[in-house]
Image (cartoon, rainbow, N blue to C red):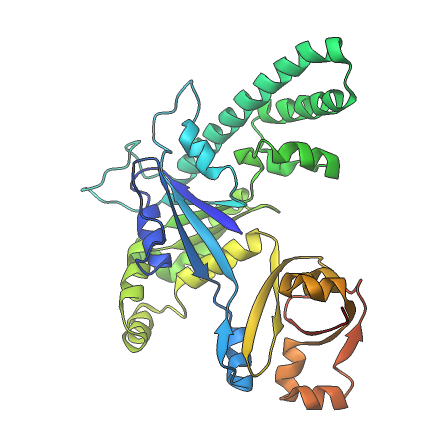
Length: 359
């Protein structure tokens, strides 16, 4: 799963990206509009506790691929967003938009203001305009093509483009619409920016950290089923990541921070993608497996290995909270908490699975 990190100049996207990767980017930037990729572990206290319980040879966290993309400059353009910028974001599953909410005289805001809501609206308007230009181009082409061909697929696509055009002209993002499976297949070829889930990250100064949670409530208008808002102080997170675990704990205690905001950001990114985690445990490894919410047991088995999906018989499962309460799998089994579920069982976040299969 990929999440694109974008933002206006001096919003903190480079700082947060390098902090996420602990300054180890797997693909160095080679130009102003290039993209940098980096794989980041999803912190999960449940997996840490399972590892402590089973003492395996290794622990394997779920991961997210973050992609830092340049090219979202100030000023706007009648030509739309840069082609390379759009190309770099075409295949990302969601967007993480850094929003500046701090003063810095050495790095002035490109629009000469500190107004996070105005920045969010500005970026969204750029996305809406970009999407509308693409939709209008396709709409006009189909409008000329259909009378000649009478192609049924083109007619369905034209109906979809008509609906998208109306939504965008009302200055509403495409993520607010619902689409049929057929429409989703058509949309896949376009990858509209306003259709992607989005996480707005307010980059706040150090003196606002203590009331960050209450501050977020003032941005409730930007949260929805496919959008969310969180706060982070990129510079403070960078300092925390540079410290040893012991020094970081002391530093956070002094600031009144329970955990690095970076962890919350990663988890929110994960949730935004519609993902949950199930676990497998044993002597060799304890692992967190990411799946889409609503995935059944047979499909979840296929995430582990295709053979498990093909030869699926049953899933032996117990929930993480039940295991922690009872202290061991054997006790869970004695009390009937270790259940056998069929292929249509909907896997829950925190389920521990052992797949029975025969190939």
